Length: 225
Image 1 (cartoon, rainbow, N blue to C red):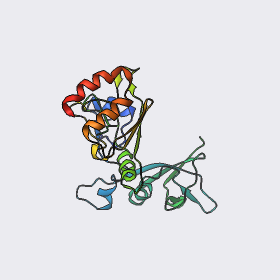
Image 2: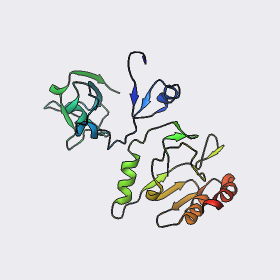
Image 3: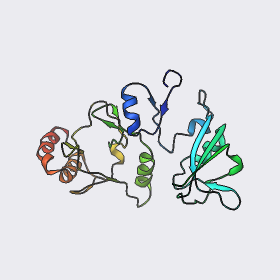
Image 4: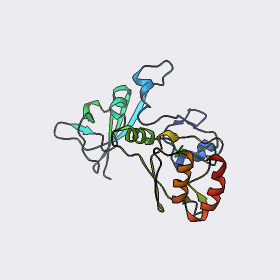
């Protein structure tokens, strides 16, 4: 397929990781809120949208479909795409606002009843895209009275690796800069980082790290505090 098409993904799920490791696909680093900006602004070199495929709720009595709970930029895509293929999912909720599409706008209709990184691992290896995390996190952080909460397990890989580390590995992509870090929760507690120095943040995070890694983290934290 790569001989005939340039495959570019912006949602970096498990199926894409092997292909990216092998150099067969490319990753487009946008958030859900910023991806459509080149199209909206008609930037030079912007890629045309030939075909847009989406899931929709069943049509109402007037023939209007809705985008369901995940409405990210779908209205914008349907306004730009040359061809629209809609897959009806009877389980999708009907949504309000500018989240509807009339059956007359659809070309093909298919019925179906049925300094936080979330992006890299071991340095530059991509395992995910930013998705909506920066949008939601920074929006919550900047909202009056808002709380930006990051919830995670203290380890992964059957407990072999700590998710709280002294430094991100060289080449890691920072999804949430430390200036927007707020509340971090693991199964060992809650760390509140806002308004705290590097030293205070280190203490907070070590306190909620897995006990097997706390001594190691304390030693590693001394030169960075």
